[in-house]
Structures are given as structure tokens and as C-alpha cells.
Length: 444
Image (cartoon, rainbow, N blue to C red; front, side, top):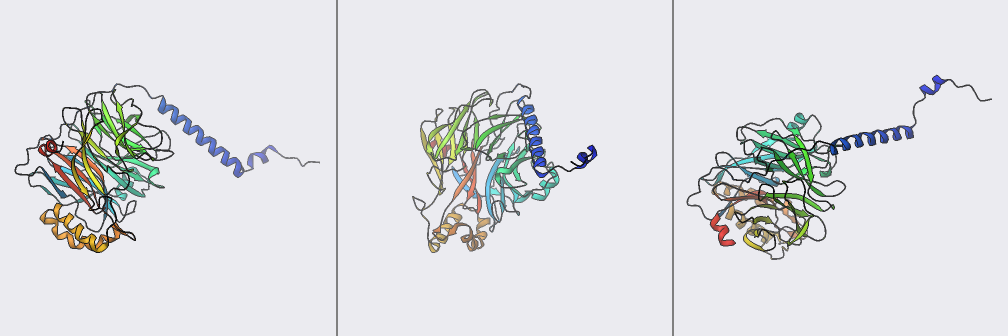
């Protein structure tokens, strides 16, 4: 006979591991479905038109050449990467970047410096954000930081968006936001943006936001988890995410640089992560709600970040990019027409002495790098040269030789017509290039 079993015995028996696993998966599915449906069913809202960037009230820089350069960063023994730059209400500039022993290192911090256009000089760099400060603000463990983006809104609020990762690699990223109402002297606590309905991971930022006439913010973002694609986050003037719109699909586009060309029209140029190695473009004519299918343009893109800005009144674009099939040994500024069909070189910003970017022997590399550094560094930074050259081989030299690398550009236009470009120079310094309209006219 079977032994008698009471109901209480069944109630006290613990669930098996398989049962617990099934329950957990079912719970995750229910939560994911609930959040996804609620996100999809969010109410429609009206959207104002784009605000065309006008820059800051700055006087022309008298006596300056049409094109000149300097270094925004000062540390000689750090890996620096992913810079951004904006104008401030008084016409000066502020640049940000991340710095540390290596990309993804636990010692990485977000740095900044300010630039006086009249003196043509960068001030001392300072630390804006750390892992610890971010963890305190968002109340969670932070493993690494990256990709700061700084921008001045039309109401003169200064915004800083940056990436943080708690677990895993960059595919597990989230975006944080801070703001300053006193031109960067003091900042709000970091706040984590809610950008997806489930887990809130794999959203990264790299390129400049756009603004709407009612103060709303459009932040171009991208994803690297289960495919690579771009989106536009639509936020209110306080930085709360209201909606988001897919720019591209297909799993191979990153880091959209969005340029408004009218109240409802904008062009997004994108980094290409597939074998075609071409710059990608998408267009909106309804303020960012819907975007055309991405098309390939004639310039090359070796899976590298690019930056675009409006070139003037003709709806053309200026684009800073590595127009190469492979590697990042040359960085140039290019102009294109409104149809993105004709492309012209405006200025070559930096390039390897080898037309093909071939590695250079260490004994030849140091003199070349010395000359390159001195051509851009202000006299105050000449003192950094010797210490820098002692450590550069760890960053730029491998068994096959030493390489030149110029990448991750960012461009902004001031009201006086000057364009300011920053980019990572040989993984060692953040370089700043100013181009005045006369240089652009000559190049175009």
C-alpha cells in the first residue's frame, strides 16, 4: 500500500531547481511583456520643430589665422578618448573627454577644460565625474565610465550626458545625465536615464544632442546588444525621457550625428559596422519621429565615429571623418551638398606621414611625433613633450612598429561663424582645431 501523504506535506515540500527556473523565466517574461506593452502604448504627444543652432555671442578672434590648433588636455601618461565640445554663454568653450590608464579601466574619469578664444588658450583640466560620484548619484555599482557629451541648451542650461557600465562590457551600458545652471561651475547629481522598457541596458551616447523650439532635447543614441542600431531619445527640457524613435535597423549602424536643416528636417550620418565600410545616412522630415532607410554614401568609413554640422544657408553639411577603408591614420574635414552626392576636401586635420598608414620604426617615430606635437601645442605645453615621448611607446607602438591614430571627432559652430573641432590625437591628447569661414571658403 502507498503511504498516506497529507496535504500539509505537499505544502511544505520545496520546489525543485527546474521548477524554480521555470518560474523565474515565466516571471521575467511577464515583466518584460508588461513593460514593453506599456512603453509601446505610451500616449502620443505633440513635438515642436528643431531649433537651428546659432552658437554663442562671441566676438571674432582678431589677428588669428584662418585655421589653428592646440591641445585641450594636459596629462601625458593617460589614455584619452571620446571628446566633445560646446560653446558657453560668454562665448568661451568647454570640452570634455574620458581619461585613464586604458579604455574601460576602473580608474577612468570624465575630464573637462575651458578655452578662451581671444587668448587662444586652454585652461587647466579638471575632473568632472568619477565612478564613485556616479554610483552615489544613481545608487548602484558602477564598473566603468565613457563617452561624455556636453552641450548648451537654448535656455543656457549646460547638459552633460555620459555612459556608465555596472556589469559586462559596453553592451551593458546606461546613459547618465547631469546639468549646470552656472556655466559648469557646479553640477547636479548624476541621474540615470530610463531608455528602454526592460533592464535599461545597452544604450550609449557619443554625438551632439539637438534641441526643439519648446526646450525639448533630442539625444542621438545607439545600441550594441543583439544588433547595432541608432535611435533618437526625445526628452523634455528637464531631461526626462518622453519617447524614442528608431533611426536605423539592420544591426550595423552606430553613433548617429544628427544635423537639423529646418524645423522638421534633419540628416543623420552614421558610423558603419559592416563590411561595406561606407558612411551611412538617414533623413527625417517630421522632426525625428520617422526616418528613411539608411543609405550608403560615397565616403569610406572604417567602422569609426564621425561628426557633422550644417555648413551654412545652403543645407549642405561639413563632416569630420576618417575617409579610409581601414584604420584611422588620417582625419579630414569634408563638405557635401544638400543631396549628399558631391564631396570635397576642406582641410586635412591630421595624417600619418605614410599615405597608407604603414607602421613606423620606433627610432623614426619619436622625431615625427615631436614635430607633430610642437606644431599644435601652445608654448605653455611645450614642457610636456619630453615626459610624453618617454611613455608614448606603450600606447602607440607594437611589434610591427608605431602608428598614428586620429579619431572620434566632434564639431560645433560658434555664432561668429567659427567651427571648433576636437578629437583624440594618438590616444594621448585631445586636440582642438579652429577653422574660420575664410578657411572653409578656400577649401570648398
